[in-house]
Structures are given as structure tokens and as C-alpha cells.
Length: 246
Image 1 (cartoon, rainbow, N blue to C red):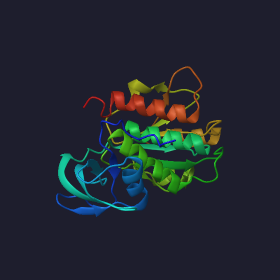
Image 2 (cartoon, rainbow, N blue to C red):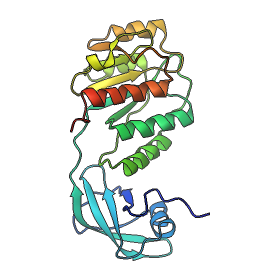
Image 3 (cartoon, rainbow, N blue to C red):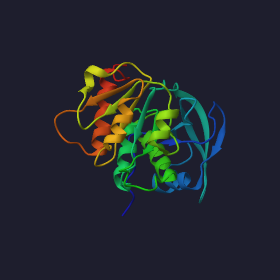
Image 4 (cartoon, helix red, strand yellow):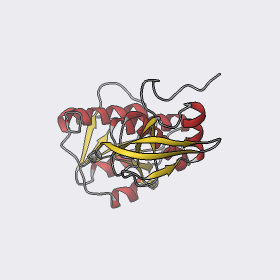
């Protein structure tokens, strides 16, 4: 059975290129990308693709050579400038593998700039799988049209993170309640903090609430899973104070 294309047939494939893009530069795709473009998508010399490097906007590329395991491109013109940074950080307690992959993918699609894993007393996942998560960040950015890659920060214990974090407003999704989220958000920069399954311990909750700039927010009357709470908070933030009005 042939592989399902990642893009509709009438649209151009879109790839992250880990080298600076500028008009006229020629690039050899890495082996997985070359296989996808040449074998799966069956693109030929003269066909176009969209490219981004995470720093210089989006560019149109033209295939100039294909081989058994090789695809060579020439960058022809910029199609979009680099996106403005959203200024939003999501701090989250790692959860099980499939659910954290889903969370990261959707957080990138919603426009999060930075992802900060925070280890808490009730954190279930002992390892974050940073290489796998970075791959999901790239794939999500390719699919949703972003020109920047969200930054994945190293995992850190909650207490240390609270001591060292940037002093931006901290919106704490407190399962015990807080101010309505939509009435609480201010323009970026900002950080949203979401806990693990089972929530923060009383000691952790008190420590967070004592932080300068921390605002406990409510995400409604229902009990939400960790990934649902994170995505609901991001969507609410983007709608009220983020870039959805652009």
C-alpha cells in the first residue's frame, strides 16, 4: 500500500531545512527527506517545494536533481517572512509517551514558543524522550505552516524552575480553582504551568501560589486530563491575549 502523503496532492510539500536559507543557495536533502520527496511523493526536477529553516522565513525551492537516494534543491524566492515570536512558554509535567507526543504536537500548532518540562512529585514519566519530542516539533511546524521551531528546554525540578524562571506572568492551572482564565490573561510574554495527572501536591501548590507574578486560573467546572488542560489554556490565552487576533 502506498504511503499517505503528508500534504494534499494539490499543495506543495513543506520541509524544515537545518541550514540557513537564502536565494540561490543549493541544498542536498538528508536521506529521510530525499526518500520522502523522491520516492514517496515522486517529485521530479522542476517541481517546487516550500522550505523553512526556523529563522529566515519560508522559501520556495525547486528540485534540480534527483537520484536513487539523492534530491538536490535550489532556493528561488522567499514566500513569507519569519513569524513573530508568540512569547508564550508552556511549562508542563511529563506524562505518558503517546499523550506527551500529542500535547507537544498540538502546542506547536497553537503557537507556543517554548516548551519546558517540569518534574513534580507526581510526575509519572521518568524520561522525557527529548529527541523524539524534537522530531514531533519539526513535523508539527512543517504541517501547520510555522516558520519557527518551538524551543524544547531541558527538564527541571519544579522547585529549581520556580527559582530560576524568567519573571514573566505565571498562569497556574490550579485544579482547586482560581480566577476565570479569560479574565486573567495579559499580553505576552507569559508562562502557562500545568501539572501532572493527579495534580500538584499541597506543598507544590502553595509554593507556586507564593511566586511573584503567579496567578491561579480556572479552566472551567470539569476535571481535565493534563494534556487537555494544557491545550485548553493555550487556546484560551491565544484567543484573548495572544496572536489569534492577527
